[in-house]
Figure 1 (cartoon, rainbow, N blue to C red):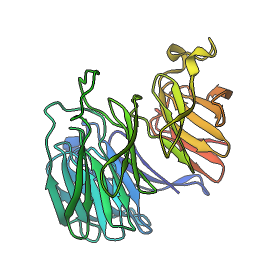
Figure 2 (figure 1 turned 180 degrees about the vertical axis):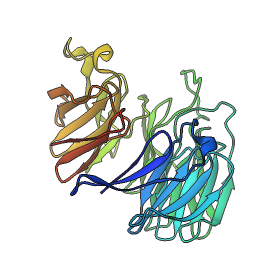
Figure 3 (figure 1 turned 90 degrees about the horizontal axis):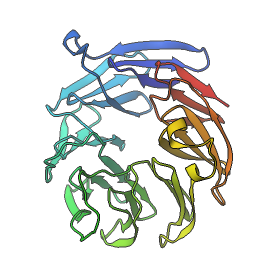
Figure 4 (figure 1 turned 120 degrees about the vertical axis):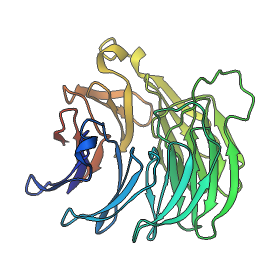
Length: 325
């Protein structure tokens, strides 16, 4: 089944087997009808956990589509959601971190962090190390926190904006924060960095900025900027293995025609990119050379791609489910 939502806040459970909607649920009253709703999802075995840009957390039974509980925390949530067996973690637009109980939506912990005076539309980000029971998150003020979610103790804080730089920062942004083998990896408006997840000390840094989620495979990390610059790095030391500018290779592939890069995934032995204007681009992971590209959807993509059982699933700008082999 695929779970998705539209701009009016209606949530759908769509059966791929039957090619039909199982249920539709809308949590929002008529007074929010003209207000664009943005929702972050995470699935549990029996429930769908949601947080939105109105400040609500709620849980839906995935079989019946009925609400289990709902809580309003007053301020819009802007980060992704991360789950453990018992807790939900997210950050609101004022950079307040929340730990919520999955059972009933009650607050387990919260943490006021340094606010950002300029409001960005970019999401903040949360990641988890379940083995060590640590949660990591970055705020829109550029601070990375490590917290033990069982003891509620702050392990360390790293300020990405405190270092001297020649680059002028008008508004901070970052890619989604990734935890991988005792490393915290993310790209900010200044650079891409790797931190030791246990100490918060820097492992390496390169002067590349992107808000697109990196992809990791064993000892390699792949980065792409929205204007088409792609790199393959050694994840241990940040050394560049190869780099390419996609839009310099062909007059047929240019920023104006295909739009900005919006996502990056690794599919088997290929790098898979989507663009704002609905294009797919496939690259050789060994050298970044273009294997193929095509316009997949004329309306563009509303969602990021999901890959399951050798098929690519997206929601297009018309609210339709698009499926590709």
